[in-house]
Image 1 (cartoon, rainbow, N blue to C red):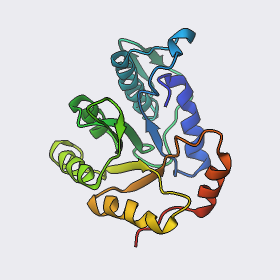
Image 2 (cartoon, rainbow, N blue to C red; image 1 turned 90 degrees about the horizontal axis):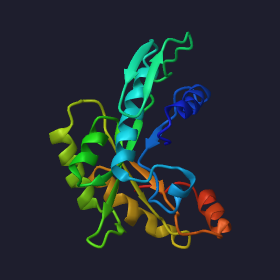
Image 3 (tube, one colour; image 1 turned 60 degrees about the vertical axis):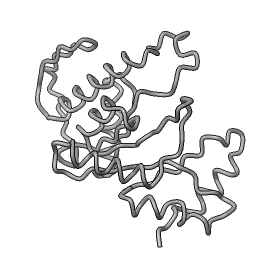
Image 4 (cartoon, rainbow, N blue to C red; image 1 turned 180 degrees about the vertical axis):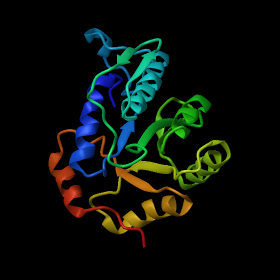
Amino acid sequence: MTTRPCELGEVATLDRLSSGRALLPVGLGAPDTGFDKVGEVVDRRTRAALLDESLELLLRFWSGEQFPFDGKHYTVHWDSDWLYTPVLQPRVPIWVVGAWPSRASMARALRYDGIIPVKLDIEGSFSAFTAEDVRDLGKYAKEHRAQTSPFDIVVEGVTPVEHPDDWDGIVGPLAEAGATWWIESMWDVAGEMETVRQRIHQGSPRVK
């Protein structure tokens, strides 16, 4: 999700077109690879603050009421007659990308409807989220989340095109541990679109 609240009108459109089946994943964005050269904010603390204000603004817009908002990064005095409430109430479900087990990142995610967890190893590289991690995260959410509404744990990973018989062994333990959604994340197939197409045609992994 962009940290520009004005672009979130796209979510409202998708919510209507899908009859309330839209989901909104949000995060700080990809690591800086030169975005500062085109005027984008790259400092992670600032981007986190922008995201927090954007989400607060989004909920205000979805309230269907006029409102004032004076934040550190955004100032909005919404007195327009264009008022919107999502099809699905109380809101389009928001999934927040969260760094496990960062307390600040977890606190942000637990305010909303789900988490797409990422885990960094001691060298600063991303590492796979395991069934044990899912159990630990689920326990943490139960202990620290104020809301009693459902909370999704959305795990990213890859089920190999060449070995569909292995899919259940990858996804099954995560589901048993409490993961509620799986996102097929083929980040390393640049230039291999045929592989991506093949995986799409194979369909979602099934848990036995």
